[in-house]
Image (cartoon, each protein chain N blue to C red):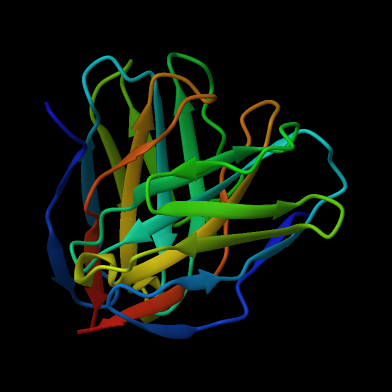
Length: 113
Length: 115
């Protein structure tokens, strides 16, 4: 596609439910990043995928968070047993490689009630 | 650990005037990149300008320029001839130039442009 596409745009879920967020990177981009942006804060790195290499999961805040990506295609970020503190905008970005500029999507705003 | 600090939560500027947004960072590395991103209400992060630490010359992109002071670890953004469309959140970010290093962001500065 022309840009990084994220869905859904907004998600409201009840505390304790699982949610799945989707990111469609720009075609041909080998690197994909997930970030979390809490209200009034900057972006926090969550996880990074580069081609078929093992992902860098160093930013995942707890074992309730996981992400998958098959090859250089779509990625899904899953949050299990959501908590109110998980409420944030989740942004995805992709690039040709780690050394190239990143293109961001418009994010998914997650609200846990 | 690297940190990025933006000490101005909010700034405002008159249309057509110039405004400077501040950013300082902390790192023990010598080879890294610095960035300014703009985030409008659409939430998409848009790259405004990028600076390689090994370059002494300050980066410039049209009305946007930076004042990079490596010794002081300062990286301010100057917006000249401000336009209404410049109103947004601005984030300063750092990335070490090695390995799978992620961007480290500051907390942002909200810029308002007054007509």
